[in-house]
Image 1 (cartoon, rainbow, N blue to C red):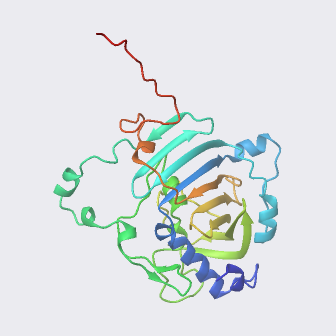
Image 2 (image 1 turned 90 degrees about the horizontal axis):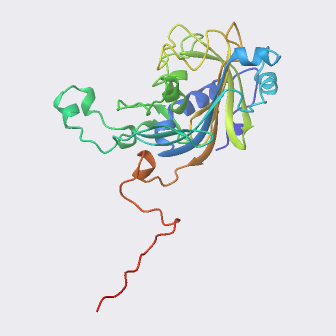
Image 3 (image 1 turned 60 degrees about the horizontal axis):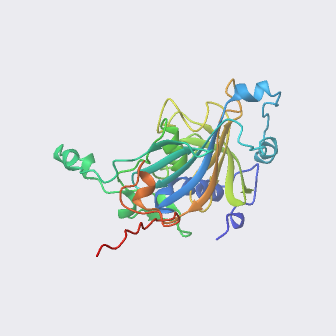
Length: 285
């Protein structure tokens, strides 16, 4: 089913549209296994130096117009991630910054701790409650958490459940949800379908990383990729942090990724693209 079949209003958010957005925000762990992408951090001070206008909007449509210049201003990184724990991060010019060199290490010591959390299964091994278009309505207890680079915002943008909560609220009344959805629209973002919303946090909003939340204290513009459930864009619209946030460009979904990609120096495979010399020794009689 197309998002556009449900979203009939941009400024007046329907209950069906709000539920669609929240279910999409809960769905990332079941929508992909590997992801290749570029991500850019945006600093409001950079925009101020460049003379850019601070976004000032009351609707998702005008917010989108004000922020379509996703030109990668800020710190750009290229990444490959494979669930549940593999991650490789490079600069956009190919310099390696981070790789998960311990993805095959024994976890014996972890399980000896015998805590309840250590025995939780990865999300892809448990079944959530889906709605009628295969989006997650209620998330089960599982070992959530994406591999992190830098801070917890990295994990939150790959799995933006903090914008929805693990399950619907008991009663759909104002301010009952973790965030209020002020406007909602289906958009095309970097050639991919996404849901765009202007949201503001309520008192129950609990970011994955309190020091680096996805949204600011006022209004924020967020875009959630329809295929993956990843937060591909988030920008504060109000206050001194207006303009801060991130943009993420998805380059590949569910591509095959070998273990060698996630280690700094490959110890297993030969790169057959390179010439392999076969030195010949003279035959001795």
